[in-house]
Image (cartoon, rainbow, N blue to C red; front, side):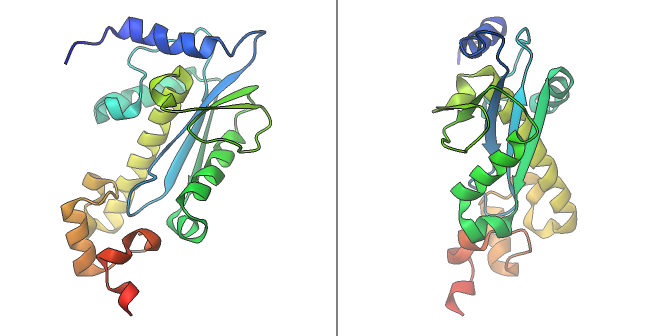
Length: 210
C-alpha cells in the first residue's frame, strides 16, 4: 500500500469543506459510529472546525489505528469551534429501528453546534436549523465529517470499554459489541445483557422461540 502524504491529504479534505465556507459560514460535519453492532449505543458527533484548521492524520476513522484516533480526539476537541455528541441506546434502537435512532442521535449532536451548513455522512432531511448537505462516504471526503467520525468512534469505544467492566463475559472491550465469534458464543451461552439490541440478536438466542 503506497504511503499517504498526510499534508496533501489534509489539504484535500479541508479544500472540500472550503467550498461551503463562502461568506464566513460556519461548517460542521456529522457522522456516526456503531450502526452495526449487536450491543451498545449508536453514537453520533457533530464537529465545527475553524476555517484554518488542518490537523494532520484527520481522516475516516476506519482508516486509523485506535492509538491514532485517541490522540486525534483530544486535538480535535481542543481546536474545534463546537463539538456535539448524541447517543441512542439499545432500547431506543429496538423501539424505532437503527436508522431512525441514528437520525435522532444526529439531531441531539447537532443541537450543540450552531452551524450554517451541516455536511452529513449519507443521511438527509434531519430538519436542522442550517443547510444540510448529505455526502456519500463523507468521512473520506470532508475534513469536518472525518473529524466527527473520530469523535464518534472514540466516544463509542470508550463507552464499550466501560460496559466491558460491567459485563466482561461478552468481550466488549475487544469486540466493541460487534458480532465476533467470541461475542456470539457468549451470547448463545449466557443470553443477552441489558445493552444488547434485541432486534439484532434474535437468531443468536432462543428468545424468538419462546
